[in-house]
Image (cartoon, rainbow, N blue to C red; front, side):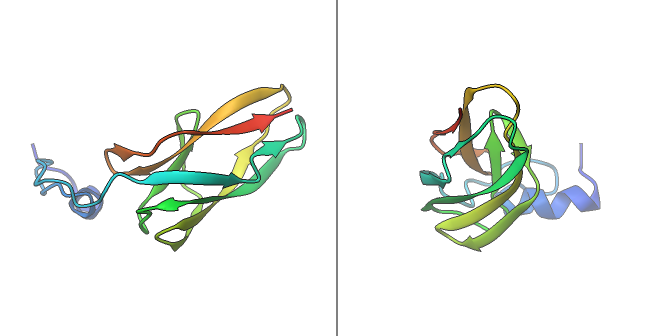
Length: 113
């Protein structure tokens, strides 16, 4: 089964052909080293965070507790910003990750106090 034109370029970016078959990894597994800030006060709305690590790409995505954020700003292979991270009203420790297609970084905590 083929994929539509809008999906094709995204799939090919991550090493898949137009039929969705993998041709091998196009990117390395990203590594996340810091999340700044890594804490926020419950009820403070949404904030932006900066992620530092390795092997980030223009198409890298960030996730918080498994929810991908499409509002990211690629800075370099080691830095990206994530906009609109919802803090919420309840203290909790959230897990932040970076994704390069099917490859996922280690998780780092984002703590809501």
